[in-house]
Length: 275
Ligand SMILES: NC(=O)c1ccc[n+]([C@@H]2O[C@H](COP(=O)([O-])OP(=O)(O)OC[C@H]3O[C@@H](n4cnc5c(N)ncnc54)[C@H](OP(=O)(O)O)[C@@H]3O)[C@@H](O)[C@H]2O)c1
Image (cartoon, rainbow, N blue to C red; front, side):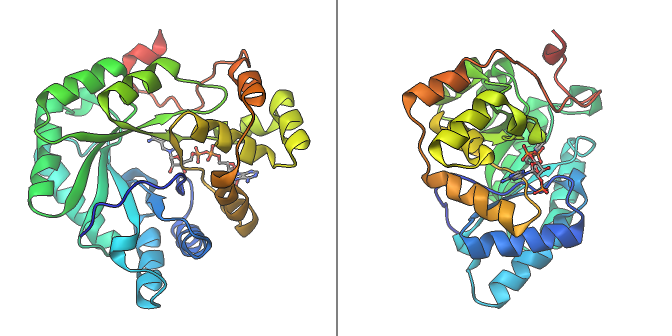
């Protein structure tokens, strides 16, 4: 069991059916990805697990050379459910331990409690089943509250972050607190790929539009986890880790006057988002 450094980019798997999740996991690892993101709610942990098993059994990689993250389902946030569902996740993923176990949403209405849920993850860490406590979709206040009660450090907050949702304050706050930011929907679920400003920057720099979005996210000190189904997209996105934009191009993206959340589920989303 090792504590790997987070790489510059990871792979997202939301909406991938198990067979597609297996394919993307295997091909991504062959390309060099070392950070895979799934969730109990995606219904594809066993696909990711089959992919991981193929990778390990063919000798491409050892378990300790890859970071695998999953998330507690918003209905599994009470301690007893958290323990049970984490054990199921381990089985589906065919792993002995999960690198990062996130609270998928701070679903207070469904039984989430900073104290109880985070300390259940802490217990899973003590048992060797999990390495790090993760949270997702937490506001700055929630991060502060969580940091106060968790007896383990909060390793990362996974938040929506892309050129149409810049999250400046949240990023600044996380930097101060030493909490990693993992950027989900870094391509704004495909919407940012049609943006004129971003398209022009891509043309000028002979980069793909997706690479411009990902390079912008990476420039903010965050780690994007784009979802990709095809080999072309997997390759294109992975290459973004070595791309850099000029400060002039970064400023142009910073100045895009659109602020739009692409993911906003009812009940589980923080009520602050509605403001
Ligand atoms: N914690 C949370 O609450 C939460 C919420 C949402 C997402 N996430 C995580 O973040 C990951 C990424 O977010 P997302 O899936 O919402 O959206 P995304 O990564 O912003 O966008 C995915 C879309 O972009 C396309 N795409 C990917 N690479 C491309 C490329 N190089 N060129 C052109 N199109 C490209 C994909 O198509 P193809 O599939 O055809 O490649 C797909 O349609 C998720 O998969 C999930 O792991 C977490």
